[in-house]
Image 1 (spheres, helix red, strand yellow):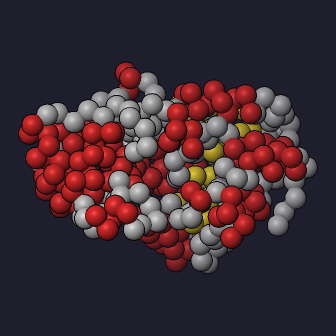
Image 2: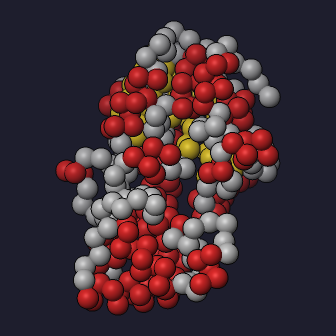
Length: 311
């Protein structure tokens, strides 16, 4: 386990920023480097990385949610490194770097998990435990939102809905849920998370609703969110672009929470290693310790993979 100069900061983030110690240790951030946090959110990981960068270092924080970046700005207020916080989707990392006049970066972090703040306070329908509009978009700027979860459940045909619930959510009752969604919208348009949870509840068996470790609506909500934000293709684009921008000897660390995402990352890293372009720092993914899982149940499916670009 590593130690940092600001142990209190580390302790304050370890329960919410998944695999924090492992990320910091694996990235091996050095003084004067350029670090890119591709999913900055409230600045949990970045606030611990920042002291390691020093005055000559640079931190670039990217997030589609401008409100999240505002929170990160507060948390990074004492950081001595040069900071650029950019409200943008990480798939556009190349454009972000070009705008900033930066050609190469040294360390890159992706934390692909949904933050507690997004789940509980966004008001955009990420949580099935709240009654909110069915938006599920990462952007909090209405002018940038052209497609929502409400569009999917009210306009997509049954087969396509079932396909994303099965593919992105790995939902075993995808067909039954899709059928029930189409049936329900035929009577009344579906607008809210509460309405959708009620539909899912009627679609799945009783044992599935009660005798499970996770909520019966979890996988459906996950699948809709991934579809709305085009998360898999965005990750593919961001992986390629960040690799291209990475300096020789630089490292990319990725925390994934979904098997589809992890397979994509694993394949990308293995291909780079096979081609002699990269060195796998993690031969197998790093997972949370029992101690972390006790304090942060949302970390249960997290997997961390790290690669270094060859010289």
